[in-house]
Every structure is written in structure tokens, then in C-alpha cells.
Length: 111
Image 1: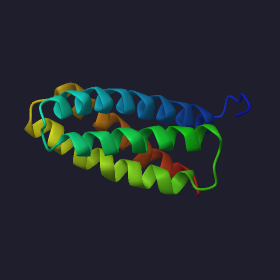
Image 2: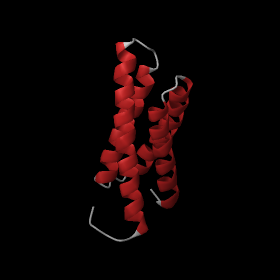
Image 3: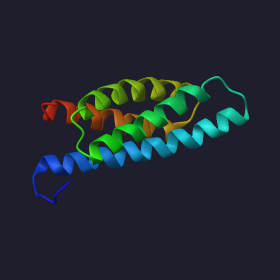
Image 4: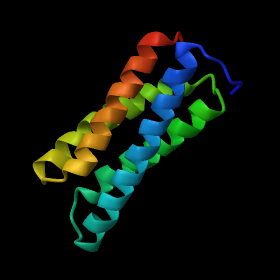
């Protein structure tokens, strides 16, 4: 993306950052869950992958990024609930931040 001082560019950058943080937090939680053979590991792995794909689509200004943001927001909401239930506050907080960022971006941008 070209550098700009518009708030939209800042919002996109913030969303990318939150998606990448979510990806990392969920991946770390998924690895631990898989080691314990816990069923919730797949939810966290799916959320992690979707957050990464969303960040990539935003980075390249994909015309389908809005769809990815909507899906990511829904996945993050679900994953945050699962993470909260098992006491994984780092993952839950990262998912909630990503959910909020994606939701706000979809409202701002006519994808």
C-alpha cells in the first residue's frame, strides 16, 4: 500500500497488526492444545490461519478482503469464547481485538 496519512490507511494497518497478533496467539494456543490432544485446538488453529489470510489479503489490497474480514471477525468471536472458557486470556484478548478491528474496518470500507 502507498503511504498516506488518511485514517483509512491507519485503520487498515491497525487491522493487519491485530490479525497478525491474533494469528500468533492462536497458533501458540493451538500447539499447546494439540500437544494435550484437546479438541479446542482445531478452533484455535482455524482462527490463526484465517487471521493470517486476512492480513495477507489486506496487505495486497485484495478486492475480497472485506469477505475475509467478515469471516475473520466471526471466527475470532467464536475462538475468543472458547479461549475464555478454558482460561486462555492471551488468546481470548487477541481474538477480541482482531474481531473488533475487522468489524470496524468492514463498516468503514465499502468492500
